[in-house]
Image (tube, rainbow over the protein chains, first blue to last red):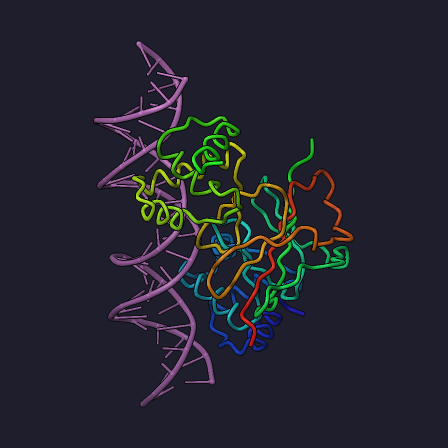
Length: 137
Length: 137
DNA sequence: GTATATGCAAACCGTTTGCATGGCT
DNA sequence: AGCCATGCAAACGGTTTGCATATAC
């Protein structure tokens, strides 16, 4: 399957208009069928490098649109910037402290045997698990 | 034990000079012996309300100094602001999505039976668990 | 006396927004 | 045609910093 085909399909999934910029970004994000973690800046850089013509503001707006459409998730690990993940099921993350990078950890390897009870009147909306890594040695 | 005594002791623990402003903030943070979660703004507001004379910049600098001294921890849950916790052992948090508040969850109630293996060449520096809550009903 | 903390205002940086233009359906 | 996306630059908000002054040791 071609990258832009995957991107197109992905936009359709989210009910989003397939504009040129969205298709570019979508194909950079899901074109190879793999999951990807980006920041607005890193995706913007990737788009420029790929020769795509997009503005940074549009990258921000588009990432937000993708999140609202439910085809991406925003992840908060590092107060200073937002990360966006193309994998949308609930799963733990590795955060590489040395190079500020985010990657997926396998959900099968995480087993939470017991979770604190949510206080009265509340329910759990999500459980975020971030495993912070540092270089060994 | 008096609040400012607790604050004084706490600063000593961190090897920090007991200036008037640091004592004020310390006593607001640990004066009652309880754990506390603050943002720079919320602590600043509390200081003003208590009649203490501190600048916002000093609150920021002081919180950072407390973290570097190892007597507080910074917690990232909400991209838009930093939270600071006087409890420094590894423990899970509740994040109240409806009012952007952070509180401790009991570590005894959290049981992680299995954790993903850290990738080669890395080790786990910390595992952050944030249980996001929303109002029920 | 010397190193360090404070206060203020200005810089900073990631992100959002207002508005005019251009593109999708 | 009408609505919505885009681009730019300017605004924004939380945080940091430079520099002069004040304070702890």
